Amino acid sequence: MPPKKAKAESKKAKEAKATNDSNSAPDTAVQETQSQSDGVSSSIPSKRQAPESNEPPPKAPRRSARGAQTATIDPTQMTKFLLSPSSLDLCRPKDEIEDVKNRGPQLQTYASSTFSPFEELVCAIILSRPISHALGLRSIRTIFNDPHCFTTPRRIREAGFEGVRKALDEARTQHRQKTAEELLILANAMVDTLGDGDEEDVTLEKVRKDSAHDFEKVRKGQKIFPPFLPLPSYILTSIPFHFTQEKEILRKSIKGLGKTGLEIFARRIQAQWPEAYPYADARTLAALHKLGLPNEIEPLTKMLDENWGQLGVEEVEGDIDTRKRKALVRLLERAVEVDLEGNGDAARDKASSFGSS
Image (cartoon, rainbow, N blue to C red; front, side, top):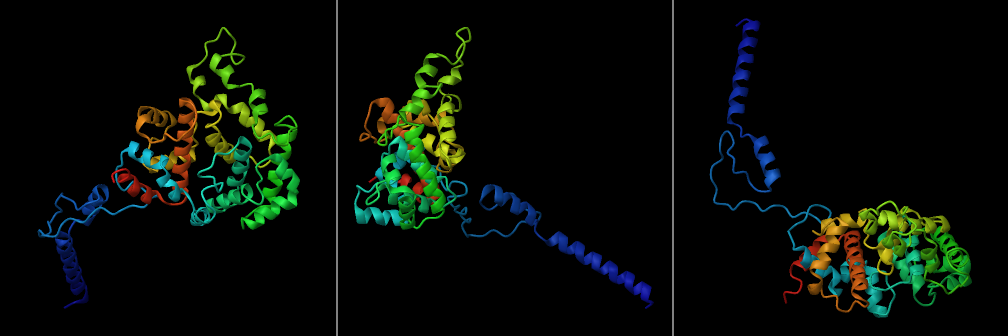
């Protein structure tokens, strides 16, 4: 056979084989797309349907806490669980769980203790440093408990830079020199600019009084807008406006307290300051969403109001408004701490059966 004719016949044979192969192969692209969107085997037949099987369809894969939710949980049920003591261990690193067991429930911890405004500023500075959640919480436990007890400006000023640096060395944390410098600056600012010269003052009341956006002025519409202009309704509930001045005073007075630190402080201080309520930063709203809770502050507070009688927070002290602010702070803190510890799946599992036994 001449070479050209042999090549032509060989080419035709290959083309015929390719056509037969494409006609006999299943349409895998259609099946893959359908299974990805549904999470189960496709019910749409391919070009050539596979033989029927008695095997049950495969289960949808379980996703991690950092992905989509594994199951739908009633938001009220999740809220009740997070507000309860049962959620605390999911908010804590392993070393803190052991520390509480060894030293007792009186140990001052970020997850379970009530701090003064000054102590909240200390925590905000530490937690806004580029360190892990575990190191930040260990630093807070170390400096707020015996033998250091850096809970007032006086205690930090008496310890000085070397004393604060030594306490942070004991916490085995990072950025110790920088953090020690910033805590000493905070203690001095509390006495010199944020307070009235009293080394024991931890209230930050001067900041609130000096702020042009004081809560009562905003609520009554005084000294904010000219009297001939109506007061916008959003002013009464909008954190970006009526807490701006307080945050600006703190930012200018305290080196090391940047955007992240101010967000942490605002999230926590609203339990004590009505002018900071209601507030949740973007990081915390994302953590709430992962747990199936509203990721906007107004729907979240509305849910708390509507279900207040069944949330199990009878031990929270104060009048009804104060108790609701404290409950919101607890919910926000535990949601973000569960997320930081990577315990989202565990929280969903425990919340689904919480209170059933």
